[in-house]
Amino acid sequence: MLKNKKGLLVLTLFLTFSLALTAGAQAEVKNMIVLIGDGLGQGQIDMARYMSEDKDGQLELMQLPNIGMMMTSSTQGVPDSAAAGTAMATGHKTKNGMVGMSPNGAELDSILDYAETLNKSTGIISTNKVTDATPAAFSVSAKSRDNEVAIAKAILNNDVDVVLGGGADEFTEEEDVVAQAQDMGYDYVTNQNELANAQASNNKLLGLFNDSYMNYKLDRDDLNSKEPSLKEMTKKAVNILSRNENGFFLMSEGARIDHAAHAADIPGVVAETLEFDETVEYAVNWAKKNGNTMVVVVADHETMGFSVTEPINKEALMNIEVSPEYMAGQMVEKEGEPGMTIESIKDVFAEYANVEMTDKEAKEFNQSIINNEGNMYYQYMIGWEIGSVIASEYSAGVLPADIRADSSTGGHTLNSVPIFAFGPESNEFNDVLDNTEFHQVLFDAFKPGN
Image (cartoon, rainbow, N blue to C red; front, side, top):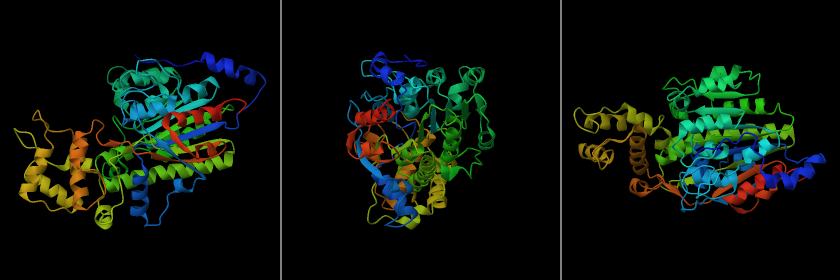
């Protein structure tokens, strides 16, 4: 079941705040920008700052004046992004795989929904598919995160004004949801140049820049990508949403930090985190000029237990210029049986990661990319195995492949994650919060008369 939340006004909110609204009371926070680094725990932050600078390097997000900590559990313990995002967006824990719904299937209202009741504009951005777990948790209610075609329609039916990221297939394969969006007044863009030139005369913009998730930053040049960066998408969204005199809510997700972490991909995590950090810098600078905007930087959960270990081979890892997923695409499949040719395995590891493999090691790698049914993994999961080999070779601090294989979440952890915040009411994050309490701070910040 999916929820069309357009025009929703929860009765209890109306009873609580109607008097304040009638009196013309205004919250101190007019605009809210929530920047989510998917999988971005403290270990990923430390890895990015150390690998890109040195032991004392700092990221822009570390400069924000208010810092807290958030616990990340779902009802089942270690969360996936659906349950983690739901807790943050709605203030209620749920089962892994569910978005915007309680464990018993009750539809939940999010901070984005609440912003709409205040006549604010709203937006969601992701370098994953815009129908994936985190953006879905803020914008729809669904029993399964996998029902992405229906989620695509529900996002538009919920009147989310700006929707930017990947996932074009979810809008076009079963029915032409893009055409429906255009009929609803959305401008539609598909590449970096079109985004830059978009006017969004109706203050509505749909941008889908890849059929699936957007490409890793490290791979864009090799793939001749025409995709915008997370910063470019966020900047355009803020430009459009800020036209509303009542303010706006924006959730912008650096999603591929998590994907790189699943693959134990150290240079990938660094590159994606640095791009995310550039987006943080932009948002904070805009908020400083605006004066009544809260900026919150956080993760939904941590992935693969990252840490900067003493023997890590920084130079070797940072010489790697493409993702493990890209490397997987350069291997040659065997004819008539699952797996890759031994020579192509050895060649790819040597060319892209400077790892010399023996025939025996290449054969062992081949076994690691074939499932129990005898079928070869998808390319991204082959990338996971490639990344784990490289991480082990260069002594990177990350969970090994066997623990990831036994994990129902592909390597998520229950580690708490840091919160960095700027702007009015952001001092409320100076605490150790549960992910449901994180939502409450957002809600209170928008509350009329606050």
